[in-house]
Image (cartoon, rainbow, N blue to C red; front, side):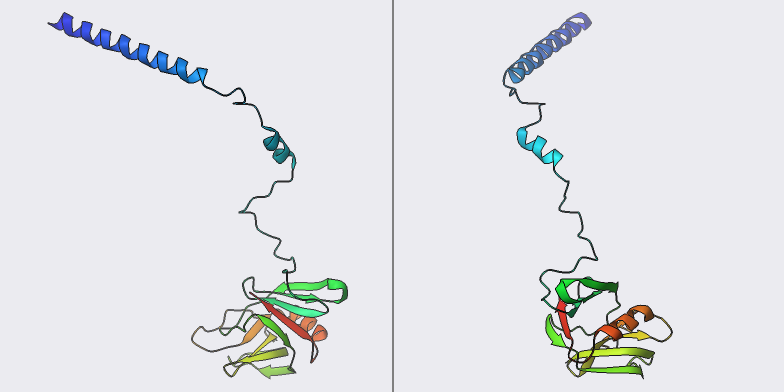
Length: 185
């Protein structure tokens, strides 16, 4: 009985190999001639500069659209400011630490400025450039005298958008009363 079962196994193995060989032959007969060769569009694509959807834009690039003319552009999503001069030329860009209350996207004008005051969080600040109110909370740019750009207390309603002292100096020199401020998402 052992001989007959090994003969059956051998026969089944031969039949299985024959079936696999037949299916492989049929598959190879249906392979397109272009398989493994670069297509014209793939060749053109490979010589073009590579861009991927996951690739990020230059964080220093001025957001489009952000208005025209001399203006301060503040991006809520990027926590970044651009000081834009005539000819749409970026004079300076820098990261900021937003307060807990954000302004709505839109166009504003600098309403008031203060050289040095105590912020609503109790921090000594300088070069305060305010441009709107949101539910009674003043929204504006400033720099902490101690140079801190720490995140604000999330339990307080604060509208200060903090920059470094050097960036605060640049904002102070650039954004006088009436200067345009554009807030983008």
